[in-house]
Length: 157
Image 1 (cartoon, helix red, strand yellow):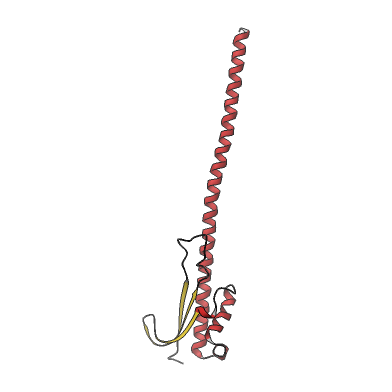
Image 2 (cartoon, one colour):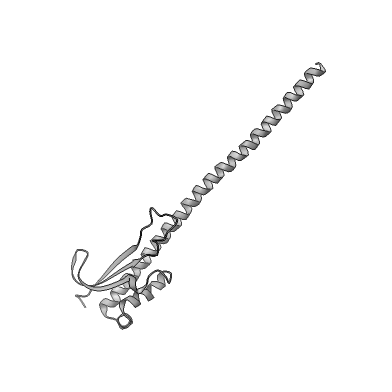
């Protein structure tokens, strides 16, 4: 092999290694970009799932509060009639939810002749919470307000 040919081969080998090294570096950049996309999607899904769970938990807590308040008002217990249905509901909601979930203005206690499609004498409690209307994670899917209703039949008492 002539010295000139060996030198050309050496340069060609160096270029081949340099191209391979450049390809590896370019590949690392691609992997970083793919990881960023996957991580951002995974975080969005995770945070959305957490928010939906918290919204469901809030609705369950509001429903329990409404049922407890309707029963208490329906049987005429002094624990709830003495302080008023709204104040009793707010106090009970703190057992299940955060202290800012509802205020007395969010609670309506009425005597009704129907509850749903059932006719009779009822104590009806309607609670509306605006806690989730400022949601930032899932604006298109988040409700503007969560409303629950509970009734207690007072015709038997």
